[in-house]
Length: 189
Length: 314
Image (cartoon, chains in turn purple, yellow):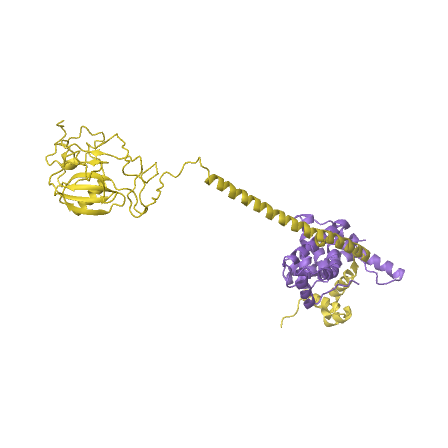
């Protein structure tokens, strides 16, 4: 099961204040807290692991520079980091936004069960889902990753994708519906 | 109240799943949509189980942190930035010093020409009596027999300032005045006391007298030294009035009655025993013949007489 760390906002504000004063401890805490979701988001969109690592480093480099110049976000640090990461991903692929269909190869099931048989069937089921997701449009893949892979709420996802909340609701509904259709139709066997 | 759409119900169930409820419990609240929503909610739960390998995350987290440390947080970077700031400041100071020294050198070069119209103040400023040593004086001489257009005007006013008289000639002599400038060392141009402006010309002096006595005529204008080494325009009028005007400041010093009426012969301007610097003998001739032939400038001021006097007597 994915565990998304949802920071307590007052603590996040305190951390941001300390980070703006170039407090190494605060910077380290923020990094440890947000690197996993940011890295996963990038990794699930970028095919190459080294490139994903470079982009994640660029995201946090931008954050540290912003923190030093007192340009850190005042509302949601997580949304700020994901927006920077998303921009870097689009810069990486260019404006054509032609994401490779193989980006989900790294997406593996979380190991919740230790029974080999259960793990086998679970892996098979998730592999079908992974293949089905390759068939989705880039925007539909993104909304599923943000909403269910990274645990962003509707508002955060809408801000990140420059869409309204209702548009994100419709988009995620159509994405899940289409994904289910691919799975039922056996196109991913 | 409007019924929630299927999209809204799907979102509601997602929220309830995240809160820990089961799919069946959520679908029980919406039995009419259960058939369609069940497979979608199962897919959502499957999506939530997808993950990037934790080992990859841990390894890359450490690598990226170390890279950030070297790029941003390392102390040598600060020193380097500090040194860069110091070097930039030093370069700015050097450039500024070069600019100042270059400006100083240009401004203090002795071979550069001085400002041409500078008026250098005298050492003695109370009485502006000093003049330059090589005084270049313009001697305007009008022969008594010569007739000028200025005197031929009906109004009888003398207008020699704006346009020179036809017979007005500039004497080629440049006379030195050693007796007038015992204490002045300037050698380029006449110097006057500060605040007085340009020196008064003979025409200016005459005009000033005519402003006071508009019904008279100027018979003689002579530059003399009076009143304790003061350079003065001595203006004599036809009404036997002598007006002494300070050359430097244009101040009317005295107005006095001439001792010998009618004493206006040309070339007799030695007053007070001083040497004449300039003689401006303007002889008014009431019966002017508009003699303009000798004038180089031929400025005929009186257009009304152009037809009557075009034939010169000379």
